[in-house]
Amino acid sequence: MADHTNPSEIARETLKQLIVRKLTPTPVNYQACYNEIAQLPNVAGFPEAQLRQMATTFPVRSPRQKQAIEQLEAAIGKRSWQGVQRALVALATVDTVGIANGTAAPTESANDQPPEISVELRVRLARLIETLLPLLGDQDASLSNQACDVLNALKDPFADQPGLLLLLSSFSQRASLAVEEQSEIKHTLLKLLHLIIENIGELSLDEQCVNGQIETLMRAVAPPITLRRLDDVERRLKDVIAIQRAARRRSLEAQAEIRQMLAAFINHLAAMNQSSTAFQTGLEESARQLAEVRAIEDLAPLLKQVIDATHAMAADTGHARAQIEHLQTRVLATNAELVRLNDDLRHASASARHDPLTDALNRRGLDEALAREIASVRRKNVPLSLSLLDVDNFKKLNDRLGHATGDEALIHLVKVVQQHMRPIDTLARYGGEEFVILMPDTALAHGIEAIKRLQRELTKSFFLTNNEKILITFSAGVAELTSEESGGDAIARADQAMYLAKRSGKNRVLGG
Ligand SMILES: Nc1nc2c(ncn2[C@@H]2O[C@H](COP(=O)(O)OP(=O)(O)OP(=O)(O)O)[C@@H](O)[C@H]2O)c(=O)[nH]1
Image (cartoon, rainbow, N blue to C red; front, side, top):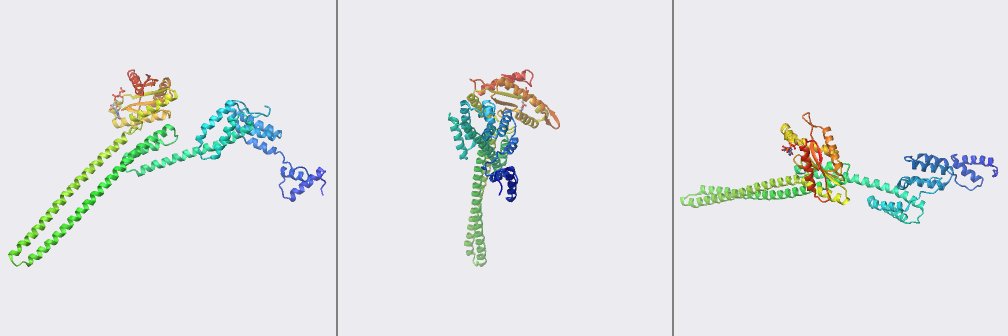
């Protein structure tokens, strides 16, 4: 039996027991065995090495994070579990707390106190969480419960601070997972939207009418998605659905009409067949009777029978011909009706909110967008500038290169403008070679600067046709909407400024 008071005896016995029990000779196992043999309380050792190793794995992205890691290392050095806990809380909340109240992360030297969360910061955090919560979805009940706990703690002036920090840290982790999930949901919804749009195209009865719209829809739902673009997608979808509905109704009506006509035609054919068979049988019978006639007076009734049958046959044929003529007239009328409906559909498609040539908004689209923007900027009390652009010397370009090339030049211009506009700006075709750009949250000087920048971009992006580089320029006027005027009035001022820009040499931008 080992002497439990002699440390070297205990150490030898400890090594023996490690071998007997087939334990790995780690410091922890050795310590546990040693304590058992020495009959000391089996207190787990402070895992200093492991904690130091862990401390090296934290990323250091800011001075505050560095401070928190130093605080952790100091606590490990002092073998203080409480200190380690505080340092970990500081590390987990360093971004929210440190940045929000501008205080440095707590250090061991700051009396081991966690950062003070001011009342104002608590109120702001509570408001932020209340605002964010609906965005995180309502499927995760435990996230909502956690949010309630955090909100209660934030609103409770006597809530214990380290506890609050722990709550905040675990809520922020969970919330970031919920945000990831929401973004995944958004991504999947977009994929579904793509699928639905593709399907509308596949099922389309009138490809010509709908396919153009489908292509633009597909482009509109390509990332990055903004609220503005989703709004645009919604409008376009509504147009496509309206056109689809009309096309389907028209096609069903036409099908019913044609089915009816076919049935009537088959009935007539059957009737004609029947009467001609009866006529033929009658004739054969008359021929047989004729062969048996012996006296001339017997011929008269036979002749009458043949003449009556012939008259009946002729009447039947005449009647059938009249009915077929009537059917033919109806077929032609239905056909004309279909052509008219088709034209109506094309017109409906063209008169939607987008210009079919350039895909910019058309006048109707502009009116709606302008009303929306004006309401929005007045609500937010921010400026709205709008610009009227007119392509320079476009007639010459048309005359020299042809109208089709002129069309291509307009498409090119729109592409360049759309590439360089901010996503919140709106482009509309105002007339032939005139365009309007709406620039929300933009004062006049910035609006003029933005349009000048567009001009420079356009001079860098040549329009290529038949290997010839064509430089397209425009003159523009810019006006900032005043609090009293309507959108139309502001466009008129921009138009006036554009006119002056033309008069003063073209390829210029003037404020109105
Ligand atoms: N290719 C093409 N031409 C168009 C379209 N719409 C309007 N135009 C032409 O644009 C030309 C505009 O001519 P003008 O109003 O004289 O203007 P401009 O030649 O650009 O002269 P300035 O405005 O003074 O620089 C006309 O010839 C129109 O026929 C269109 O959709 N496609």
